[in-house]
Image: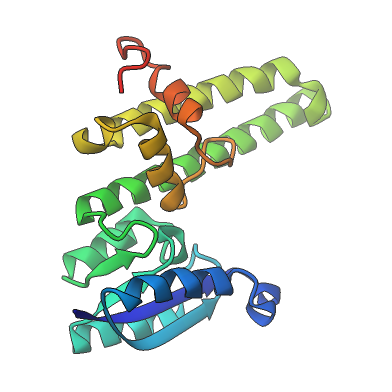
Length: 216
């Protein structure tokens, strides 16, 4: 039975005041800690996940170091949106536990964080390129259908390649349903910002030539 420090994050003041999003995080963490150890402190930031200098997050990290406790979060994206930051925390020997996937190893946390970061990069690049092209042609974004379709296909291909490359052998050997559940639990969305389903995982993994259809 170990010591845990709970960390919560919501993005807006409205969510913070209303408890929207916090209740679900509290429930997931409470359920996990109840069977795993003792909760010694709680910290909560009302701030974007892009900023890793959050005051309450830094307090949680310092307390975890001094108390040799693990930080427990509801979802990986509640902690940070940058794989380098998560990697740095793990390299310092600070235990990080995600209540939605408590059995995930440090290696798997790296993978899920890298996938989420790559997904955001592709979405950002696709949006910027589409806006720039629409502006260059002097047309409304909605009239540039063929261009956007091609961009979307390329983005999907790139994301599919990164997804296949970063999933470890153990996870690749599981069913499409299990892979979808693990990705959703990690807070990772598809390239269009939606949840993964077994068919979605299959579609992405079979985009690459040489990967047999239904090979998992």
